[in-house]
Image (cartoon, rainbow, N blue to C red; front, side, top):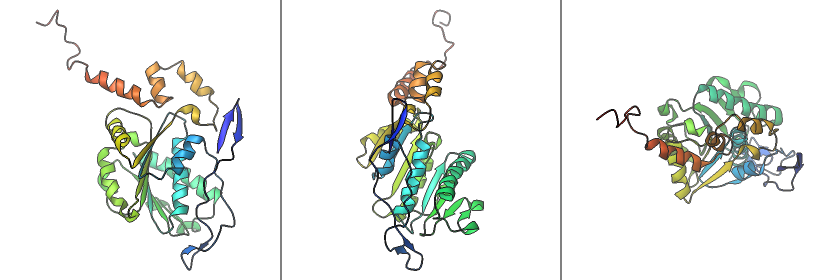
Length: 272
């Protein structure tokens, strides 16, 4: 794990347990400790997100906070931890799906030899990655919720979840039936009114769910100058949401919007 102190990036001694091991493709099981260990740096918030074992994990983050990268790190854990079990990476639309696909490929092609070689491992035509330990990860868009039916699996990542409908998540959740008594869905999003806020409030009351906030400054791997300059061009409310990932500001703005008159041009002095 890393932290930034007085502008300097420092490594802490905190790290997760080592997931996975040396895989025997004939026995289809781990048969010992891995010869090489993949170290992936992360911030404190990313670390909490990856290490959470609750059934629902919501990571609400500001722009540039590294929440999508936290999702990829969590996928990496699941691939190692749960051999022979399938997972999904869900995005709001085709463009976001391609972006998430690219981030995953950058990690698994450049940093590991876990994928089957060539077209055996990278199934671009069906947007899947096939790993040597029997894991398949499907990248899919949620713009047509019914497309999420079936396929199975035990876990799912939902990126940019503020743009994914509750209907899509309701269809996705029962598909994780291969997870037995502990399926897991982890979501990354920027706080927003409407369905995302309603789901957030439900998660806060759910003992099997956890919520984590990534403000933009929590990302220790990027320069924060752009956040400082953006604040001069934003309203305070927009800053609180886009940079601070503040749910209470979203809640207040949603309440104020509900109080607006149906006909804003109505004037009691003129219209009697």
